[in-house]
Image 1 (cartoon, one colour):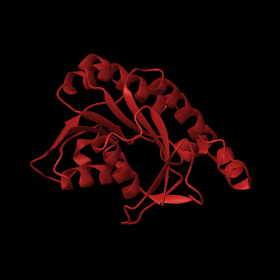
Image 2 (cartoon, helix red, strand yellow):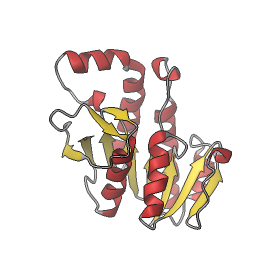
Image 3 (cartoon, helix red, strand yellow):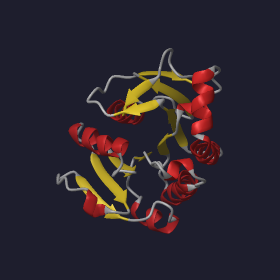
Image 4 (cartoon, one colour):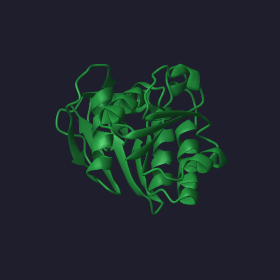
Length: 205
């Protein structure tokens, strides 16, 4: 497959690129800072562009089989009002519509599940701005006719483990964390196996 990756410089995005190449996919990394990607591979193309710019994205999207978005906002900006992911969701949807690309996998967060208890209440409060941005991004994606999958992981950790559990519309039981690599593995599996099309999936280790 020919995959178009957003957020390829991030922790999940880096794993996406690595695993996609290992699975013999052709990968286009569309990033604002291409110099940060030092890896060289015959199946990897690194393009400079702003994921908020629908025109830039629409120009290079034709011919791809799927878009995988691992965009997110890092601390400390994550704790302040921001709209990055929803802006990028809108431009991505617009560009995909123009280019005729249908498959989209978007990383969101488990705090959007209606879980109860102190654990969820604490993280909902801490991640208020993240939850607002991702919630708006999800609404934009859900309103389209695209073949989307929204993946909601809990706390992300940096390990080499790529094993995950997934369930529709709920976080797997006792799912308190998952590795960046496992989220990337799920995203690729969702595309390759057409899993969770037009569904929200909770994933955890």
